[in-house]
Amino acid sequence: MSNLVEDINTIPICPFCEAQLNTIRYQPLVGFLGKRYVYFCPECKKVLGVSHRKGFWMG
Ligand SMILES: [Zn+2]
Image 1 (cartoon, rainbow, N blue to C red):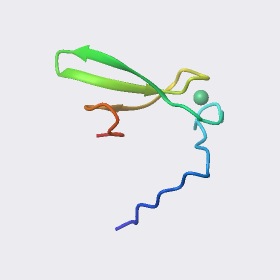
Image 2: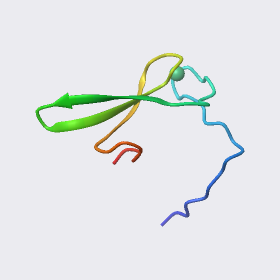
Image 3: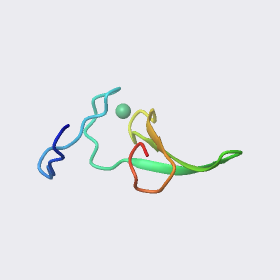
Image 4: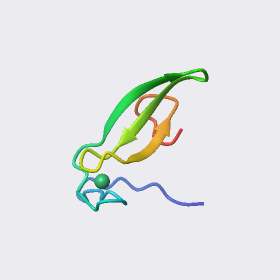
């Protein structure tokens, strides 16, 4: 079991291009399974994760 710690001082880094992710972009993707949100790096455009719900990471 891991603890969830809020950290507002560290800027996340993209695992692909190592850009600092001050913002993460997302766009809705509508398919036969319903609506999904695709999150991607604004620098290299690689996908960081997909969520069922807006704002719910990897859900
Ligand atoms: Zn990137």
